[in-house]
Length: 308
Image (tube, rainbow, N blue to C red):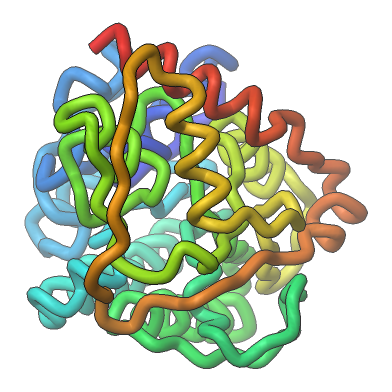
């Protein structure tokens, strides 16, 4: 039986990864500070540690375990929010990574999979962006993700820890936090539509993103943990399809049983205008493939959200 640590296991992606591991018969320990996650989302079978994954006291609690791998998914999870408290963003996204990598070094845990972000690329790349594209982060959050990747490269080359950075595009699906209106484009728009029958969009309607469904993201995490990887690798987790904000909103409106109004006003600091990514590296090396099309994924998410 394999033993794994999942940080952020009370959140959208972390809870889904933890549940998948449990379903496969693994033992799972979860760390989460519950700042945006929910205790009840952590699978019952998990050992639960409530706290920050950068706190020394929390890290010391891990000394009693020997993990086969660590999924580091916790961290402040939005570009806009990172401007509100850059120090917390740095601690939750960078300091936590360093301390967990140091734990891996000291406890001979040689598999580390990290939730990075397409935001490391910024807007200065032709699309679709491949993993070797220029890195031009435009938010504290994106800078922190890229810094964490560089620490992973160091621990991989100097200490033999096999590290994977998954550069997630816009993840969506059932289970996403509908209360957090600062992170998750689909959940932000859908939550406003259901609560207010109105969507206020910060930014241009022609902005575009690459939306990837939660089940496909979980599959990518599991495949990377189980893969025969030597050193450091970065993979885009994406569909390779650009979807504009206007198109997304029209799709959401069409799935709701009531009329929804929309206005476009304001901007957000550091917001990327448009990006979509090439995931052929992940598809070719690990036989991963995005299975859920946007229309079907939105249908599943809206159905879930309408049930409360």
